[in-house]
Image (tube, one colour):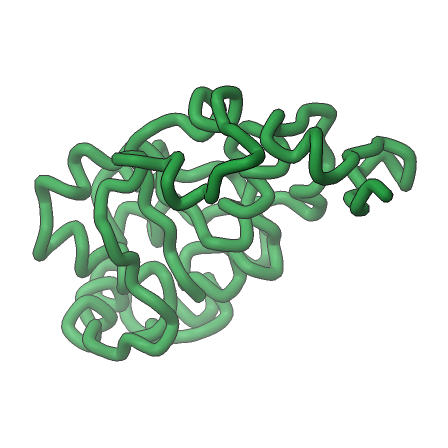
Length: 184
């Protein structure tokens, strides 16, 4: 999984987007780091051990989140940024996954993180299907304030981002969730 780390609200950016210009040109300084860590980065062994220790060990973490800490999971990646780039972590307003960030672009607001994605971050209490406060704090202080809650249906929203109005149509017909398709 890939972590997106942003420092500006998505909504103001979305409301001023021009559908004729590439998104990359319009985000400017919306991201607090230029390159977010990706799932292939396995440089977080130290952070994994620190997270496991903070929650009472690898077995305790696995009983809580479904697995011991893995180098490629989002939690240890965020902890590494917190430890190695504290100034970046401090100015970061929102931490999201790429999947929920893309949904955020479509709805024009921060989207929740899908439970299936949240379960693979070493951060979710799999029995409660909600963030584990212990795991969040073991990852980085205040992390719970920098992310949205997990949800079983993060696609449900009644808002949409203006950049997509000319290119796609968003409708609220199928089970109350937004459906996206190209206009002819």
